[in-house]
Length: 326
Image (cartoon, rainbow, N blue to C red; front, side, top):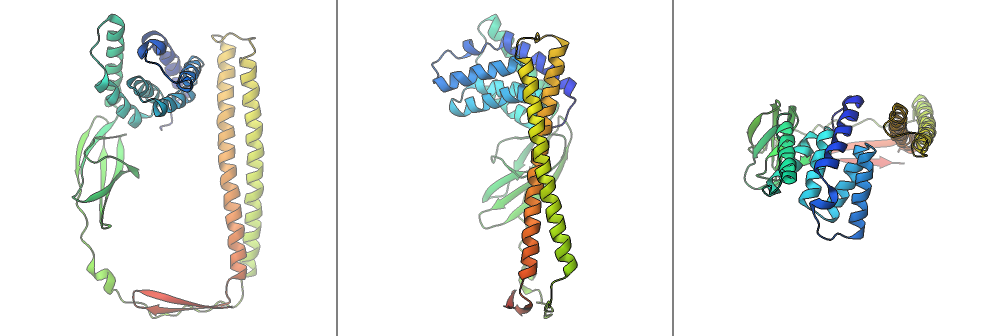
């Protein structure tokens, strides 16, 4: 996901809502029977689109595609991911969408056909394509830590990317690739030769000195920092709750019928509600991280206090033996 201007997203959202309403009729695309749950999700996705809540609409279509995979669901996911600047996902989804589309037989299908091909062409100019040739006996192929299929094209955003292959015996092949928008690059990997000298490395004979008493300054600092992080975590969660309440109040005002959806006041309330919801997520995310860090630091301080007073490290071949005395 790439950061972008909220005003640009708002304009794109309005355009997408118009496109989906005029050229992508949800009920007419696939008239085959669906389960009640899938139909309810489609209705909720349509409502979210009309509210210009693209992330929520995209979430509904992802669930629809899991429950009832179809070309329509893939095409809708590609449309939303393109507007949300999820370019890698949009490229894969729109490619599958165009590949599965039948030839148009009427004006409506022709407009839909042309729109989807235009969207695919637009996103193709903003991403790069990697064609990775892994070594034989590759067990896993990763691009930027994301597992990909061997032999399939991999779509990435412009910039530097890490390609890694791991073998069935633990071998590793690694490459860094820098690409620009519109590039199509072939990447060939080969497993690194094992380093025979690693097992013959000399083992240090030094013995670590035993620690007699814990340092009071470390204990005090650890306890203080742990308390500060826990307090900050609680405070951030409280701030997150307040921001969520503010977002709920804005949404309630937007839906009480006192404002027209096309009015400037409605758009301002929509932006304020979205901003409050974003703050709530950030506050809670940082709050949870602070709580985890505070608890971890507190536990580490306790371990430091009760750690064995004597520790002796003895070399043993390729490893070491640690002897603790309480």
